[in-house]
Image (tube, rainbow, N blue to C red; front, side, top):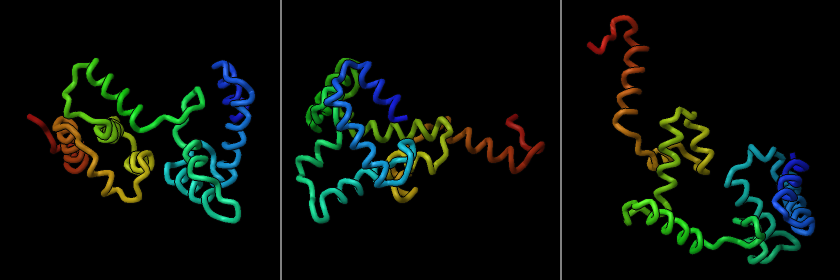
Length: 164
């Protein structure tokens, strides 16, 4: 998997001097978690940073930050630059100015739920410990609620259930 990822980075014209340190970091993270990359959660990333910032030779905060949100050009994206990109996209799409970047989190959770992803998967995707926290972010449509209610009644009542 890592070899394929390295080839992908190379195909994006990144230099070996950029790719190799990234591979070493991924290997360190994999060794730390004992998990495959597709099993990693945001909580694993936070625990890794805490681990690196403690112990006999703690890394500097600036080094830890460089491990977080990294662009293809190696630089770290600041929250400000991410928000500016969102504002530009929102304006280009003609969306309400009251929408902020955090609304995407709500939308993501809602869409995963309405598209039928398991609740535990949704919860892990956003790094929540408790399902009740994830539920706060969920704003499912009336149509989705009606579909859930109808499916539940059909399961419960079987042939006795009829919409007519």
